[in-house]
Length: 230
Image (cartoon, rainbow, N blue to C red; front, side, top):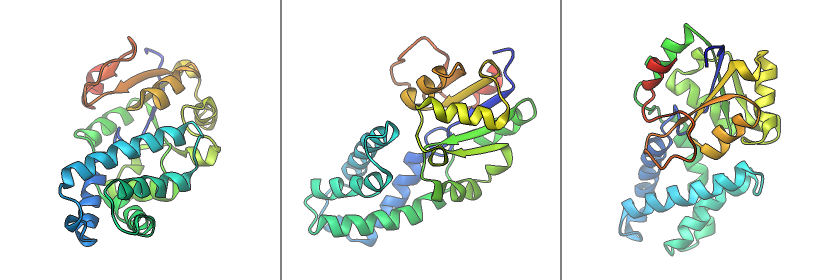
């Protein structure tokens, strides 16, 4: 990685703590909608949401479902699982309120600002996100992250999602970066790591849960490890 000049970051689950932010937002809505009267355990409810949401995003990333299906389908399925009356109507309302609340949550992974501030002095930093375009700017503003990045690319503007090579190629074209000068850092092995490798970029897998490694490539468990690597 001696020739690295450009570092591309993923946002959700890499810098922006999706699980913490989404749990906080859903907890608020859970009580607002009196779901505690129908659901015995919020712990089970949020765990089921995270599992269902992960599955929907995996399908979305490879183009098997559309944005509307992700936004609403995850809550339709969740509400139906818990036998919530009028699950389609209530799920839709819940989904709309969630998308209004969650992006405003400010929780980042520990060390995010410290690491980005350090790296910004040595490299050109960029952001590539599969997240919904309309909430991307809100997340960046609420967390004061925008100042670090030269390029902020929403995959929606490309028309396909990571891991499609076109997303990474577009990002490099817009930043005049060559593959052997570019490093991708993200949490998703399939979307971020394999996608970037397929375009010739270097990669570092952010694996905070210390899940089983899928290849011999470099990985980190805490963002501050990047200070010693780069």
